[in-house]
Length: 335
Image (tube, rainbow, N blue to C red):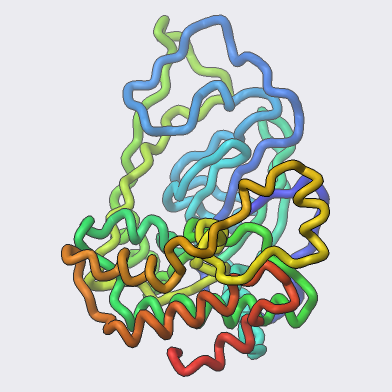
């Protein structure tokens, strides 16, 4: 989810579902010091208090209503350098209906936009669908001896490629492809089921050490971030936004040579020694070495790893025109 300081309009589509993300973003103003009087937080693992100031976070509490009482705050989803993010109930009927174009359903769509005027300024808020953990969170929650099963890997790769193909058809390139930008959908939109997944909200009171009242720009308590503990045996339905393959980490294993039109500029940089030695380990050899390490579970055969290597290798070409498109990769027999 992201904020913009530029006004935006929601999509004019039919609606469905009712659980949403509502972020509380700060305006683009310089942060100021909050007070010379010390404020104490009884626990850690929450957003920094100094960001609750003019131009900083908007204070939000459980049960608050936003945007003319449309969105009711249910739980905190997270926070970052520019916003806090909240799970909320949309009290009106519906949510955005999805287009039937292939690939479109694999993108998180902005469903609403509004502004909040509060003690810390004016905040731009975007509303999107509520999603589950990222692929990175899911992997981190797995045992060190556990891999994702082949059917799930294929599902993730196929849905991601379908989404990328949709982008490319519209002459759009995604510039931030990594597993933290891949999220799973939640298997239900029922409020109680969602809250059970998120766990009971844990809060820590905010108070001054001198016991004097807080100013209105501070929340009276903060939500403590709960650890993500996905269950590898019961994964969420897959909802993918970007490609999971970290291509940049495998470029040294590409089998082709530097295109001729680039070589003059490369040598002008006096860095020919940085060119890859293609006599070293190939991509296929690396895949087999990593996969068949004798410790983690294995449900791919050597023939399967060759297919995977072929798919990845077709995309790892230095010359852009030689790289396989997302659409062509989707036609590979491995899927």
